[in-house]
Amino acid sequence: MSPTLKSRHIRDIYAAKSNLGQPVVSIEFFPPKTPPGEESLYKRALPRLATAQPDFCSVTYGAGGSTRGKTLEVVNRVQGQYDITGMAHLTCVSSTRDEIQQFLKEASRNGIKNILALRGDPPRNDPKFVKPDNGFDYSYQLIEFIKTQGDFSIGTAGFPESHVGCTEGKHVDWQRLRHKVHHGADFVLTQLFFDNAAYFEFRDYMVDTLGVTVPICPGILPILSTEQVRRFTALCGAVLPQRLSEQLDKLGNDPEAVIQFGIDFATRQCEELLQGGAPGIHLYALNKSRSSLQILHNLGLSAVD
Image (tube, rainbow, N blue to C red; front, side, top):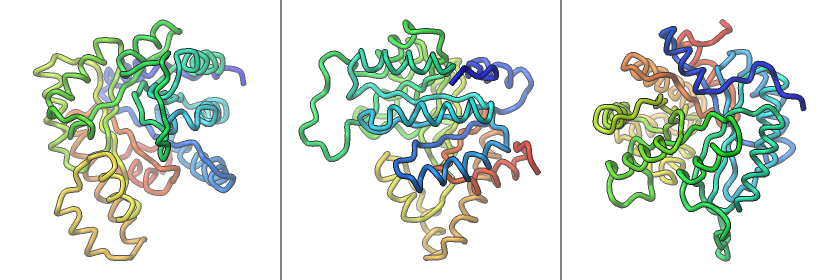
């Protein structure tokens, strides 16, 4: 596929929107693993979300690089079919340096200018997993390597409530994020959270105490089901506030009520974040369109009524 002309460096998107006093809108997908999943993403979710004209879309990279080719395929669709800037996630924990280099070469050939550099997780349910010798242990090393491979805009992940694997405390985790920025990350996308105070404390510490100047964009997960959000927060170490948990309990097994509640909660959450100076909103769409589209409409950030 030939490179799209519209694809831009995300660092430039944040700079341009900041100069205009406007927030950056971005949406995240994951590569489908089954034919029904492909149909759902390519024929429903992606076409519908594209109508909102987000500033960019990102596509995740499965544990252990299990979706390497699919990740690039989805980004190619985003850029080539919908003329929206795309970003490919890239993890390093189970890949060799040569595999990473090949991925970046293919991304560059397809006009992909943006990479979210992550350490990542090893393949699940693989007790025999052994980290490759010729690879990287940490995401800052991956960031350094990406910078040698072409003119990419590089993002990294931030954790307002600290990374689940960090045992030394959130300030140590946040200092490690500064290290990643110093090694070349252009912007930060945060893990999901439901208490905005956690984001503001994190952002203020990064900016005021550590002197970080790159955009720190909050990642927002619209609640689609009570069981799902509890599973996600348990896996990633995010906090599900007691009051929010109790409100979900009251909705019981009414999926429609939970989805609408999730839309309303995320809308209020985003309003407060933007009023507090967040540079944009990054929505974890989970390959669904309804909630993200309604949230953007409620915020006046969608290109469609």
